[in-house]
Length: 491
Image (tube, rainbow, N blue to C red; front, side, top):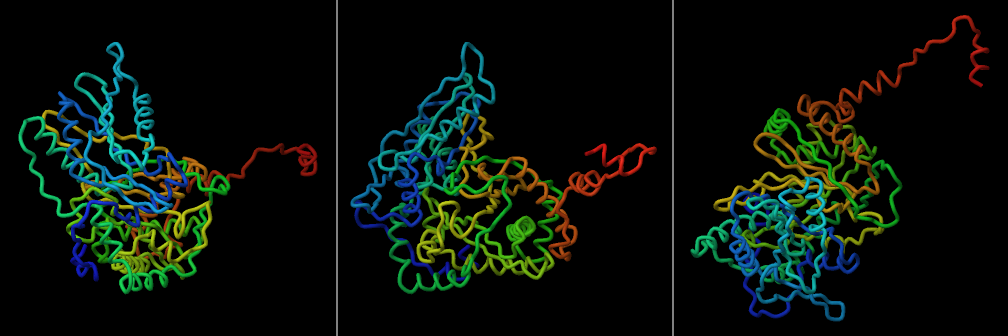
């Protein structure tokens, strides 16, 4: 990223801090801590990773490997201590990770899939105490002598999506080393997370802060909330109750969208963002659409190997007025995205604090929907003597905003899920919206020169229902009776 986004390559290096005492929180940590004060014991920011393990598991090696990860990454053993309402991070000495064993096999019988899913969700939802706990814990569900599900849960205050990949790689190496009695081969960490937090606070002030704020204040001036039609009135206070709806798009459609992106000199993310904003425009009738989008935020190479919360959220606001063609919209989206990338150093938390938008407890500030694209290999374990694969599970039953579209880009297809607030939307509404999105993307791939209003939206089955079935007006009626007699019979 630093090679082609202006400004990032000139950021100063991150020095090691001189003392091991209390340190200020990063801006992201501070926001998550404040949320924890307002919504204590909420599972909203729990990050859960369930992995099925088949084969002869060395539990002691797994315990040692988890302990070594926590000893290696200070963020996972950092507690938040508050003095006079001012939080600070305190790094605790290394100690064993909680790895509970849950026996699920009863009299040789294994539990059903629904029971396993319920237990995974219950464990994933168990809250963290940010003032006392390690920010990583494990649970080992034993289905059979050689079949387990390992559920690793971390709090977002010490982790993010990128961190899962680091955890998987290091756990793979550490387990292999511990189970064979050799020394692990891992690179030294040049810094720790607290070093980054200090660096961020020191760098982001004065002229650098003023430059970032000037851009975002201009970009987000007079922003109005997105008003999607909902199945129920919006509660006065955001509830965070949610569910997930999975989807998968064909390899043919993925190939067509990738080819379109190359022709138009944009990334696949930009094409999906333009398509998503077109869908939101058609649903809401609004031409000014802002979508939140996560970005890794690891703007220095020193940060790339650390477990911690570096992810930032960009607000991508696009003008869809004038009924442009999709190709014209792509040009607008490209400009918006590249400008945002060039100003990604300003944390979302600092942006909200400085802009001070009109706040309401019923919705997130600055945006109500998000889009995230992951085009890197999913976190995976490769433990000796075991086969491992990530388990599909329904999540923690939470939603951070109205809806979030997560897209996974593999070599063969596009898939993912929509996380949505269940106090606003029914599952049937989300499934219908996903059908509209797929139809829209197919129309975009087929003819990007069409105007936004002319692009198809309804799948064939829904189009037939609206155009044909709901307009079927033929009825049998008695041919020997007058019109007034038929009216009287109905009355």
